[in-house]
Amino acid sequence: MKWLLLATSIICGALGQLFMKAGMQSVGALAAFFPALQSGSVSAEQWFGVLWVVAGIVCYGIAMLVWIYVLGHFELSVAYPLLSVGYILVYVGAVLWPRIGESFTLEKTAGIVLIMLGVALVATPTKANNHE
Image (cartoon, rainbow, N blue to C red; front, top):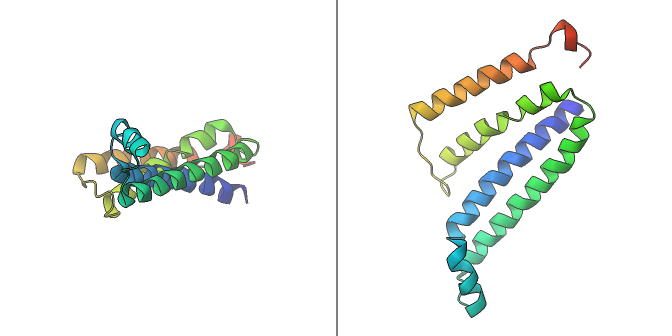
């Protein structure tokens, strides 16, 4: 159960990032959005973007609440590095989700592979933390 909750926290955090990015692409610069809001000239696309941003904030809130539970059930030296799986999810999501449409590059992918290797090292049970 605790591993499922750790995964939930990581996934919600990654979704929060993706949703906020998708929303801000529609909202545009906040410096232009707030005057448009005051004048009543916010477009439907911008309002749709605001919904994405709110969804991202909700996901972040869920991730934080679940993370508080996780902290009580994992060693911090194990749980915190595992959060870096979120970097992998965000990269894959940003590349695959057409709404965001970021580019796939060899350099970014090499960085993700290094993160995955680090996560594997941290997650590998040792005699000292076999009680996990």
